[in-house]
Image (cartoon, rainbow, N blue to C red; front, side, top):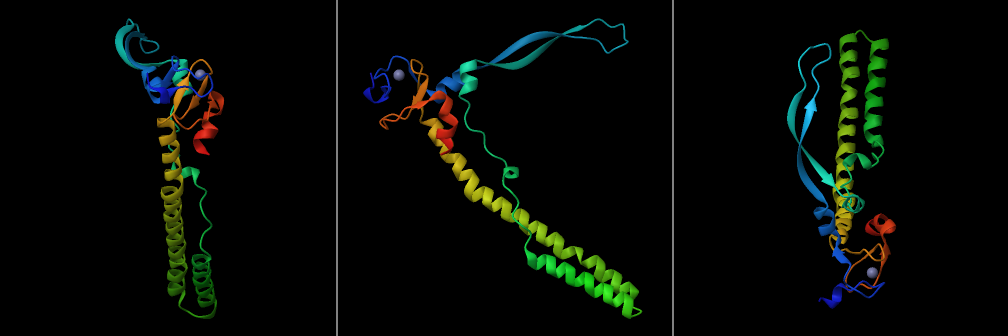
Length: 180
Ligand SMILES: [Zn+2]
């Protein structure tokens, strides 16, 4: 018996299990047969088909690992004003040209080119958003994942703990605990 795996709350080991094992053990791939109804209006008989699915115990579903946050969860930083000013400048130049000279075509070209700094600015902003995600969000999620991987669950107290750590966390507070 591994003394290190004793639950800090009840000081026993008999109902302790690694959380990730509990999670994965509770998911089973199943094959089943299902009747597929014919298309509406047709006179064909229903067909029996093989299907695959997963069956997950309620306990396993409770202890799913923290999902990786997508880039979309990062708020886009504001557009750099340099690009806005550049676009505005080009727009004004084209406006002035169209009123004060005969270079209408040139003024149109300049007007169209005002879009370029905006596009570049938006691309830079997206890059910055990706960088924040890569450097802040993903490492934070990786920490939560590694915490999740080291958790043990005691069914007697419905709580989790990290061996040798001494702390005990109630099952309903796991999510907060993982991300803090
Ligand atoms: Zn316990």
